[in-house]
View 1 (tube, one colour):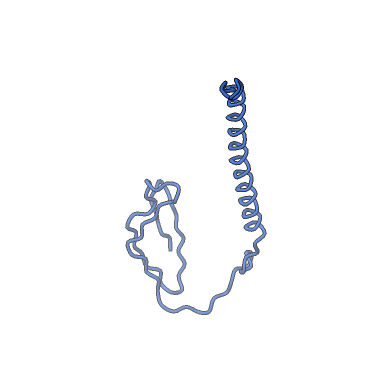
View 2: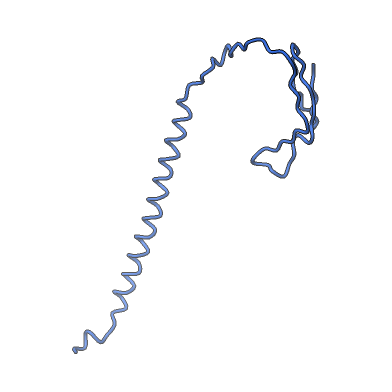
Length: 112
């Protein structure tokens, strides 16, 4: 056994650690770039979609008879789960009428 194999080369060990760390960081960066491209592609897919219904004219529905009832409706925005926007709201929409929700000072009013 010669002296070279007994003496540990610390400088080479530090360079190896540096190279491994660099490759690890590069792989993480590459993964993020790929995720960014995929997200960008999805955004353009959504932007390029065409609605099935003409957004300027809407879609004419056949005549509707009856009523629509909402009972005990609660609603929270997905980004604000701690804030209840609607709390146990109940109302009925009769056939042939129109209703517009008006929100003022966190209160919901239905105007017929």
